[in-house]
Figure 1: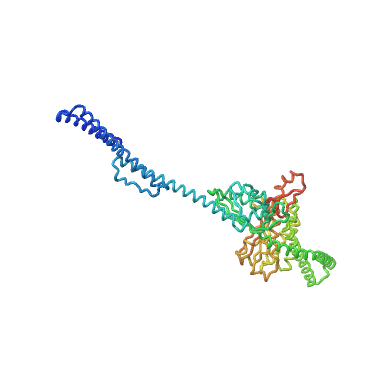
Figure 2: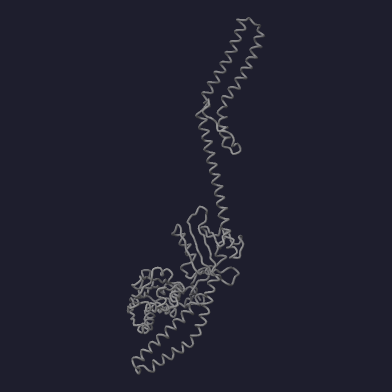
Length: 508
């Protein structure tokens, strides 16, 4: 374009000069005009031609800038009516003008897209915030530092806090959540998600929510969602479903039952005492038929005692009033004692209990009374659900992780697969056997709570028509020895639930 402009300018200048020189020569040589007149005419002609040439050359050289400027005005929102330049009419630097106009169009499109994207992002954030704030459920949004970044108005009302008191702070500072198991809490789930998951969801039932300056804990169901490295900064979304009225009603019903059942303890104790006296006094003197009656009376008294203990202990667990004292115990000694007590109950039902205990098991940390209830509940279930089969197998051994595992196996009716996920929940029973086989649906719920309070796990493996295997683990006492030495304590007290920050191990 530079060469084309120089050439055009040189041609115009040359033509002006030729015109001036030619006019001078004609006036002087051909027409013999006065020199002064020739000078005046030449100056006027030079002025006119130079001015015209200047405007023409300027328009010619600035033509590319006009095309570029028109392209800029075309993409400017304030001049949206300006037409796009017709680059085909360009005489000077057409390729350069076309390239510059294309750059203008590209920058404009990028800026428009960026502005549109920013506007859409802002609108999306505003819309999401509005939706969250108007949700009818208490909802909390966390970032990766576990600081609250957004909440619904219902959440503020639930916590009885203002947004300034809640936003930017950990939720646990304002709301203490307590879970049925110290191993399955919101804190452990958050830790697992951040260490090993990309996205995940979880749900907890009957979580106790203790608010600041509120003496009465609420009972809620809790749902949680996790999305790692979310571009918006939101990684955790937690929703509470307030079930206080429903669960409190259940607790009141259980409280009423426990009060009524508590009144049975005294006459039941008297009844068991008389049965033991009769058994001692008439041993060897009764006919086989009366001896069988005596065994059935004793078995029924033990069954009723177990029923009473289950009801009372479930009530204590739900109220967080059941305290276990973990001491160093020999598991073979405890297990053999429990099985000896259960043999009579099994014999009355026509069942036999086979016990297999591996050698060299380490001592355990256990509350003898509570762990008795766990094993007796599992054996009692095996007796009731063993069907026509007679054998029940109890086995104790060491796991690869160093825990003592005990299993109770029967070969009876088994458990439908649909029932298994909720088997350890309160009042959970199979509808197929509930009418034929008695029970409260509290034994497994209680067993899980007691095993969890011991620091172990309980599980089940079953196939319908082939029987079931229930198992649980207990900690070796050596794993608690270091904790014992810290406080110079002789024992460890463990509560059934960990109501404070989800922890359940306490020393006294």
